Image (cartoon, rainbow, N blue to C red; front, side, top):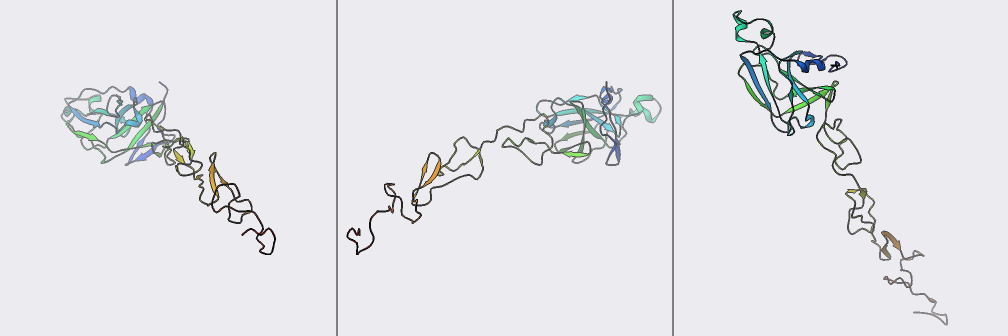
Length: 248
């Protein structure tokens, strides 16, 4: 299998360096009497469904690869050193795993990338016979914190801070920009994102026509054009009292 480095250079986290390769996911642990069960609750790994989860002590793999389920859950049986390692009754690979108190780290292989689950809150250490449920997980890839979310600006759910889409669907609704106010002349019932374009007929001589504001006051005198049917309507005629055709 082609080796894929976790990072171009080693990344140091909690005092340990990481340089896993995809070959680590072929690891088959020996059978010992020291196991620590770890369950990632549904939703905690939902951005990596189908990925292969593993646990490590520094660079030493401690589990078989475990597939992350459709509900974002996962489980691992972390293998520790056999108790016989202390009295010499167990030797070899059974004594090259985890000891009580060793820091545990986790990684996922997905789509050819290795991603470290960099921050479990709280961090875990190995304990023979131990059991933990995990909810709070953050992710790091290539030295950067992964922020899952919609990264495509054409969607309503677009998150400018997001840098990873994962296997969970974040982009759901295509953005349709337009005026959302039903009292505006250019109201767009198909729009779902207000673009600030709303126009209103808020003057006495303004009306809405075909989605636009139309002003019926061509001379700008504050009286609406004759025949517009709007009030106050301009009345044409002579305004000179001395004229024969004076129109009061």
